Length: 305
View 1 (spheres, rainbow, N blue to C red):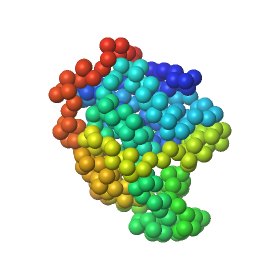
View 2: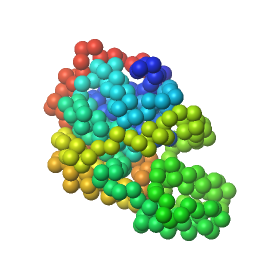
View 3: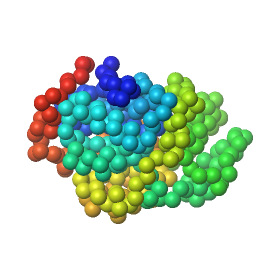
View 4: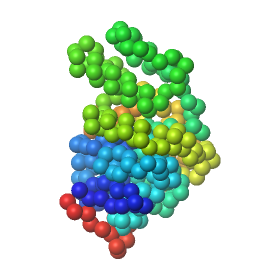
């Protein structure tokens, strides 16, 4: 199990494949298994894939504090330094995409391409209330049918709220009394009982929730500084879609891909289509004309298999 220690925090990571370096960053309440088994293994046929557990997630350490975006960026930079990587394709989902965007703004020379998979920024999209979400009724009707206590339509949509809805539908589906609305499937491989318990521990025993809520917010002017080829890749039914079009408007070299009939967790709902679309984007934007070895420093660390 490859791991490093950055500022006294253990960071668990995995590397496999050969080719240009490609970093995959998962979102909150997930871990590097979010990208398994399909996405990472398919990409590793053409790229050297690097995945890692964010601090407080998976097998990485869970410090009492230190969950700001600055800490997340520092972890990513430390991992790349450890592996001797000076330039890479960066792909992030949800909160992981926020890390990727921040890193692309602060370290533009190290990011060959940026893929933003379904995230939102307050500077691009005001917080959305449930009642304003186009597909809320599809969820609401099923939840009401099974006597589930519902939040107010005035409650703001949050990742935690979406995970709670997903948990409820999983329980009802396992009992054979409900089926998730297909258009809103939040199928997620990372939140079994152990993952859910780990997330609850993170919320209860650390300052993570406060630091996630506060964040280090960007401005649209910051985002406009992004110059590398960028892919904004969103699920058709995601509540984050307004941010998708704002990224397109704000980043000069940005293309948009919308995966049909899925929502926020589209990478794991349709992994083959995700890899196909991402692969086409990456192949159109190779760095160093395919000479990936020149994008690694001489002190590159080769992790154990």
